[in-house]
Image (spheres, rainbow, N blue to C red):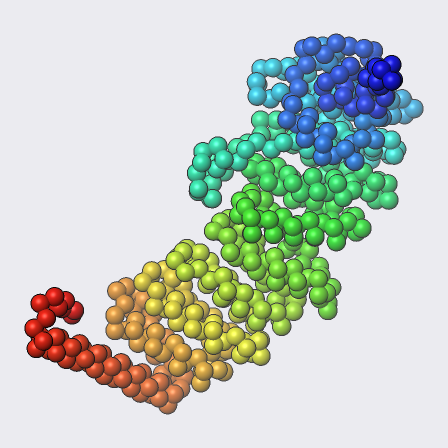
Length: 502
């Protein structure tokens, strides 16, 4: 038994395991083309190594077995250009170049391995030109090696977010305050290479989908959390192209984006790439076929409308508003659902967020038909009435701008019997007591518009308002009289501990 245990402890390491260790910078390098080379001078990004080995095993594992470990920095030498060698030798030279590009340099020290970094950069640029030109069709093995190299370079541990480093609660960071990846000189070319591979007419989706699979897509979506806006722009373009070219992945990509939104809305409320993901979805929604599937309507209700809840909505509101209006343009019957959703998440004390909501509400109402408007006009104009009386003058002004929209005015005119009595009181309160002169003037203009639209209804609303004010004044007088009687009774009893209330 003891001998068996000893034998198991000294078992021979498999070839695939040895190659994987060598690829990520630990263990003995492979000896393909270069021989065994010591790696004592190699700087390895351990965070990236761990991330890649654990999360992209499915998409890289086979490539690891084909593209063995890159040589150490001591032997990274310039290689001849692919276009300068015979076609029969290109696959082997392509593999050698991929091996070099699999090596991850330490960019925290700008002066470290300058020569080797430049060699890798030049090779990456050459690979971009090679894929873009289409001069040589990539074999399945070459595509496997290419995606494996791209995965090793881009799938990595992202640095901590700025708020984690500073402890700040500020959710809106300027671009110069966000962290930029120092390895971007290489990352940018790798992303460009992936983009050119995806959009190339030579790329066969039946072959490419074996390597650009669900695992690859998930890890690509995870990178949208990067604070580097340059990286998110590349990711947005690449994911959109993948969605368009790989039809088999479309439902999965939509579901994965939904899950990112759910986690952002209900758990973290922190994510750098919500705006970019919404931009992709804007194009996707624009291509939805009619009649719209129930799945897409559920996405609107469960993901897009709740995105109005987070405090950081200003960072992605423009893209969100575009997606919402796209849904209404596709199916105007969804307007009632959207408006009620806005009212559900309407801000109470955040004035800037309230102004965003009012702007989006105007866009939604422009696409709303009379039947859908009538279903939600009562709660809608109760909220509009509260906004008209807002002491924050920008909120009140933005609300009055709704009357500059001809379509909205026509909807109001068609339903004035219901809407006038709801907002008349708000207009009268502004006329009598709003502190801002601009708001006071806008109130007078809207009031005059109502009078010209239906003088008889205006007079009726004014009469009901005066009656309501009179009843309120009468109730207040009765309350004061009741207190005075209580005070008189207490004074007659001679209560020394009596507390007077005015």
